[in-house]
Image (cartoon, rainbow, N blue to C red; front, top):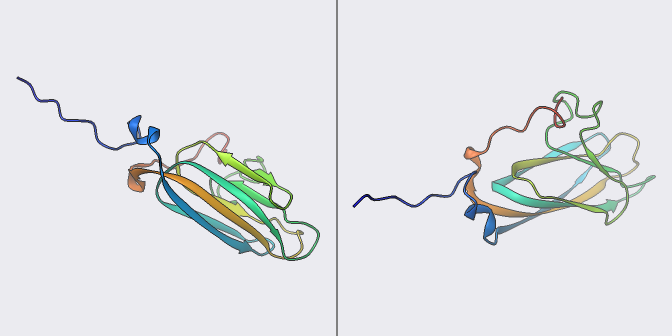
Length: 137
């Protein structure tokens, strides 16, 4: 009788995305012109970024993107989502190992953000780099 071992945790394993995920929560402040990469310890199945507000200035503008603004055409190609007000949020239903958050020049004081992620059991080393059309091109 042949033996068929079970499928393990992985990028193309449906069960890895169907079960409840491991929670991950973090946050920080960004100064004008600064960007930060939030690295997840495992592959995320979805995550939410919340604009937690400005400490002063003309407004708490944040940009959310999948690579650094120095990578390709992130800014010139508008490969980001803008969160323009306190408590505005966006949820991404996509697998990834990190997200970049930036504070464009001219926004006034420090701008805060919070990230809540739903992590799979998939090791981050299994994930491919996110590049190409809509991300860096």
